[in-house]
Image 1: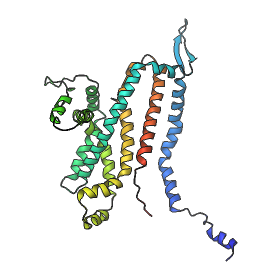
Image 2: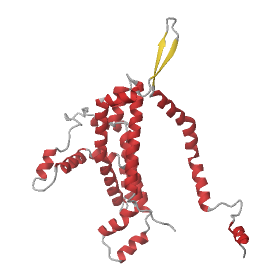
Image 3: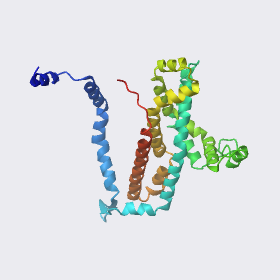
Image 4: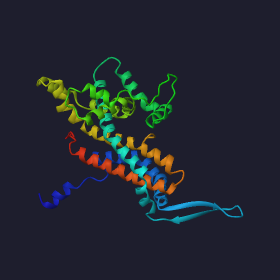
Length: 316
């Protein structure tokens, strides 16, 4: 057989796409409404927002009562000015420090609950719904109450106690661990977990469902083979379950970071919206964009570090 005949045999048949190509087309068809909406609605708004951070726009009225707009270009003035805003820098540092304990707490708790709810037990669907209910309710009154609690405002519930009271203090935990060689950093971390247990449960619903989907995608034959080989439950979790759901850990970590930085009670978002934007709109816009770049950098760093340890099961 000549080389020309070999080349002809390798040519794909026209009109018949491969399975991967058909899946790719369906994927683009699925995201097409978002792409169109982003290009027609969100992209112009983003461009205007970036432009607005470099200028100031004032609407004035002349002697005849007619309104006119005055646009003044300021270049990088607002971006330089925000670094002189000590309150903004302090709020930004507080937000990052809060992230350091909140993301591990939410991811670990949601994984723990998902593993329990993945077991065969009576009323499993009811328990799943119970843990997801806070996600639905958090868009209403409970979110406002949570924001007030985290901002330090007292909420009168008729009991004569403040809703901002903490469950335990650092001194309580230090007394409990007085006979152990436990550092103060770990004590402070435990205190934060206990005092923010409501927030952790409230923000773990979506992550729990993602972990449940990952756990249910693991083939039961793998666990059966491990039991036949005599693996314990502890070994099965760390050798099978944990590696198989590591992609979900990456996804949930990114989701939790973005959710923590953009939710209503975030200290930076509250400061810019309540303290800066009413009086200095252009400066607030510049601070929003710097905040966005910082969040993007943190997400990229987290994804780059964690993805190096993610296990992807090969299907071929």
